[in-house]
Length: 157
Image (tube, rainbow, N blue to C red):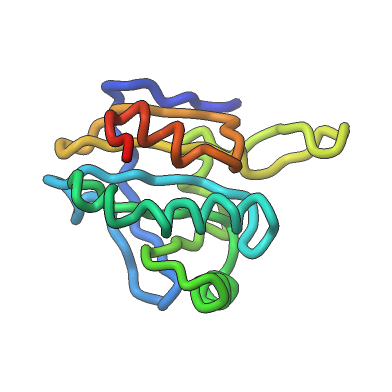
């Protein structure tokens, strides 16, 4: 059932509502490098840690030419609260039907407190200027993830 994207694959295009209600289309960012990260739920501890790490690293990521987008099944209203509460400075995208999450292989069975549940598989995708997957990481750990990602991208501070 689960698709797994690999480097060189075309990144599935999408248009989703952002935290402010505006539509964001991946193909409109062609020509830029994009980091798309999938997280389970706004304002939960791990997702907050990861989002704040991206926020705190945004200047160095942008200086290296990367745009950052977060995606979750949360509705835009919940995303707006998350952005306001934590001062997030990049768009969060709403995928309540998890259609885009499924296309990226970031929705499926996972273990949660010993139970198998269906939900978001915390994942990160680096998309190159041509719209191809440069890096696909599944089942990432929220804590320290951004620092590990920057190191893989050669962007150590």
